[in-house]
Image (cartoon, one colour):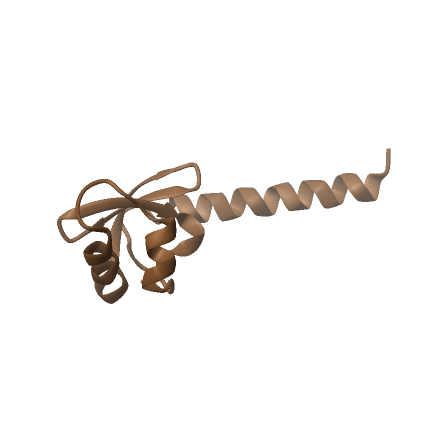
Length: 92
């Protein structure tokens, strides 16, 4: 067994675990996005409401993370909620 490969894989796994832990700490935090409205409309999974209005509101005002499921964050923005990939949001 190549020890260097094992150490490299372990460090890679450890970094992924740290990033996941950091993302899970976003619950309850205010977040924003740098996505354009067009890209937001392509990637967001809206639970209720008008996609374009929600997108404009989120891009302008941000939202609050209510829950994280695997790599998807449930965001509350105004009166609406939607899921978006955690890589598409930034803590405000």
